[in-house]
Image 1 (cartoon, rainbow, N blue to C red):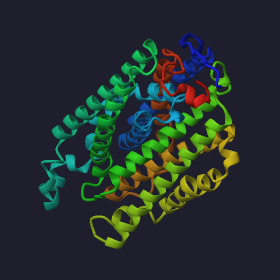
Image 2: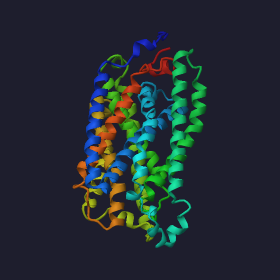
Image 3: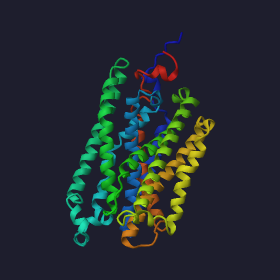
Image 4: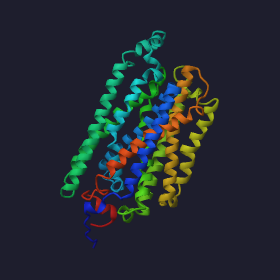
Length: 403
């Protein structure tokens, strides 16, 4: 007969080392933002390009973690119990991301050519799209997106806190109900956000798979980030006694599935656009399959699909938390490069400029570190406020193999 085990929230407080990481993240964030601000002085166009890429990268982790939390509740999967609190802490950064979106509003004229009246007047297509490609609608829709994401994050987090303070299983159905509605709302709002903030960089280009690509890519970014966090927590008490090789094997299989999904959607988009050969669509890939961006395209193919695919085929590697964490860090680097690949060549093509990837790299990296440092400080702050284990989750015993 299985032993009956009782978990207490007080036994799963965040490790003391988390406070040190929080301070280092804040220092790195302030330094990165100061260096990035210099880029705004020297080259505003490059600054806003790098800022958009960094913003979308960290936002994808925030929203991806929210999606994974809801997927965990809906699937009743034991895989998400031990990593639920880090995922909840990540989705709690929605208010911060709403604040970090403000500079993009001021940089709209640097990023989006449809905000220039003379460009719209010279194109019949843009005149037809003018009701949607409108600055007021752009800002209003962004407010709606962040309001919806903020509501979902707050409600899921609040119910999770109440679950810790009630008898086991009391709030599980409410979490499932909110997740059922919230997952659909998240998919819809993320699709529109991807169209507004990324696809309209070239207002003549469109792809029916772009929203799904962004949604799946956010899940990949979030899962890779959570694997890194889980690996760090697994080395320290109180979580060191909970994480086992089989748990990381589960995370490795999920990571493998998301890598495959990203590759499938990316290839499908390329195949559909290339075979259609429409003048509105094909420049997207032409600008990325020549010059310096050809090398970046090959690096993405190898780095974000081939390498993780071959490594994650091994069941042994998926059970090694350090190796899996290294793979996750590599995937995160490729995710940032993927967003750069989507933003910068489009603006270069529209402005008839040569590749500016290397000259602007210091601005891009400074902004990535700046926004990331502030984001991580907020994440660590949220993580240390709650017990690291949801002690009243009804499937806790199933996860650890006891009653």
